[in-house]
Length: 112
Image 1 (tube, rainbow, N blue to C red):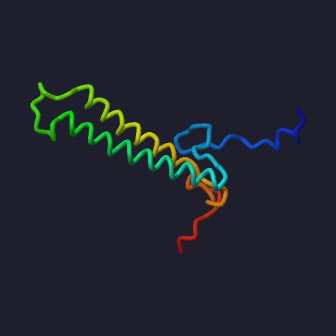
Image 2: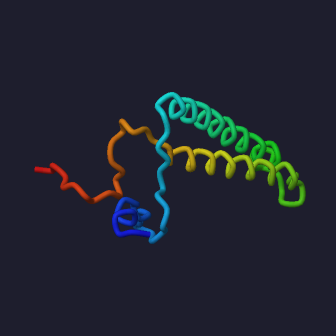
């Protein structure tokens, strides 16, 4: 490989956690909107549904420990976690028009 070929390749971006991959995924605006809408909708429904299942399993938090329906409570907690994970991963998407990542420190800020 010649020196010119190696200089055209961009090295992987190092993030603050030391990972070799960039945390954000750049997608077209239409896909960004679709991902944002449906992931937020799923996350809200999953978290609310999870809390409802936990509420049902614990009989509005008034059931003694021996009467808690454990499978329903575990399913409810699983839904809450699933909604959280979906929302967290959906925040990694951005469009080219959104500008630079907050982790990029190549340009100075205009904070006065």
